[in-house]
Image (cartoon, rainbow, N blue to C red; front, side, top):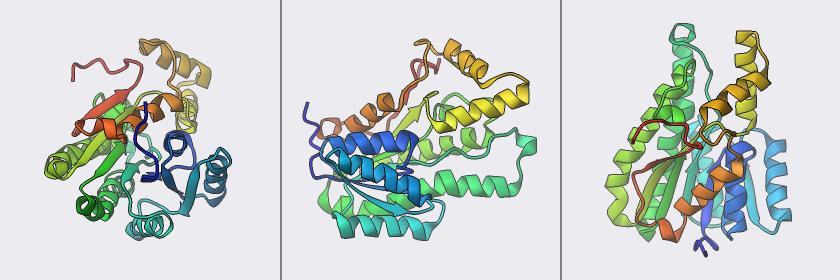
Length: 262
């Protein structure tokens, strides 16, 4: 199936590793011109070089998405190099883990900037151009925690749900202009973030990371962690021409982990 992504300009935040890198790689393989951003220059350069070596087009921008000026710089640099942004994938690393009584006001402020303000800021920056062309795709990478809270992830549970609500509301406001807004909810996927989380939980519980991962796999009907490529394939579809009638949705890629009906 031709997804209709050739020469489309896509921004993928946190694109130097994990889910962001997987999404950037598949979009580039489909012919999109991809701009990735991340805080670390070396991982960013390595990810971009790998995409280019595979025959894709990629431009990297060092940025911290919790800083509004950095978001503006990513969007303006994307337009300078490739043209106006047509596909936006918002994405960040996970915030600090912990129960409510361990979290400070500063922790809440930092997580709000990282998760919610970054999604709002990127949307604000790209929407005028999408509206002018009457075509656009906004995809927010959130988490299964937005639908079924995960113990010990107070900040992620709270603020990723906020991103889902923001996107669902925005989807209605821009649908008639040819712009779709959707959320993708990764489950337990084999990324550095999940490996680190398993190590933290193991240290707190006096067990091993392998045992933690085995527990997660036992909760997943497919009995395995997801792979970044599993997730990236759904992102590519939502960015495609074929997904023009899909908007306002929060789609879990979780091997069946979420037990709710909706």
